[in-house]
Length: 90
Image 1 (cartoon, helix red, strand yellow):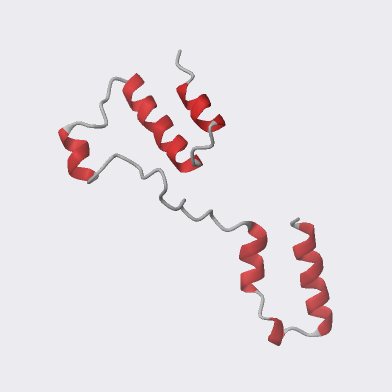
Image 2 (cartoon, rainbow, N blue to C red):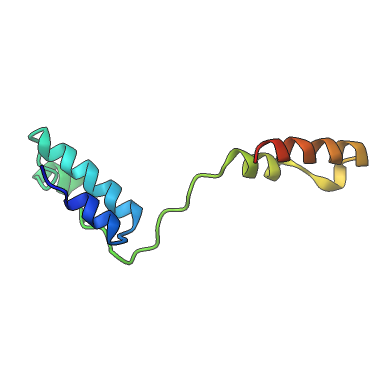
């Protein structure tokens, strides 16, 4: 068993690089080679950039509900209720 991915994570490589390496390792362990001709047609380069910006994280439930609030349309009572709902998500 190889501990290369664990060492890479401890070394501080970006999580997106580690995740892609785990997917590639899983394919290799299943006997599928990600660098085959079919894979090359689907993806221009399987190599991830080490310094490429990470993919933006998915918005949390708190961020989604906050984005749906229109503060100008709320009464003071509704604003207080919305604040309590948002606080419950923390």
